[in-house]
Image (cartoon, rainbow, N blue to C red):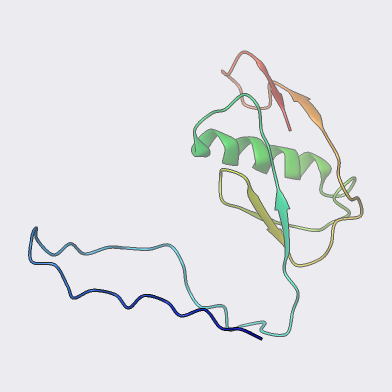
Length: 109
């Protein structure tokens, strides 16, 4: 096995001002032995994450006892869905029309 030597990081810069950065990650410690399933979700047309979350929430409410077999999920509003159990299908396309009142056009899930 051959290891790659990484170039060391240069010293800290002097230009600019320090900036505090807030991130949206946290350590997961409540279920370290559990498998988390990741799914790629595509909602069309492309709309802001707040609309995507509303579409997904409504879709999940309509399909929780059906296609999703009671498996709840976490959706970040773009493309990533996480579930504690594997969904009962490998790949699936759902069509939904006017899930969010006021959009006035079809949304494909």
